[in-house]
Length: 147
Image (cartoon, helix red, strand yellow):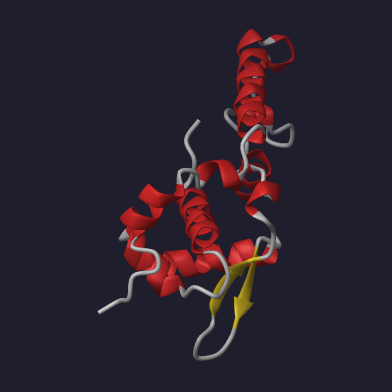
């Protein structure tokens, strides 16, 4: 299963915010730390705001803040909210044109694989992804003053 770039960016943004701790962080700062598009990251930030993961703080010292504790952000829930889980045509009853859907073993196999994928993600939280902190903080230059 391949995740879309927006999901990758959303996870990276949450990792950064989880590591940064309290206080708002600008989208530009996060984009710079990961060397990714600020424009695309801003769209992802809006989606995360709409889903209730982050809050936008306006003003000169504004930015984004986590709304939930990292321990309360389950990776499976996040990925389900950001991704469509249609692996093949027959997963979507409204558009299924496959003649063997009702008896297809491949469909059942892929459904089990998808369930296993999400079950594994459900076992992890954002807190799990931001440990060990020291190396991640160093690699992302969190807390370093920008020049």
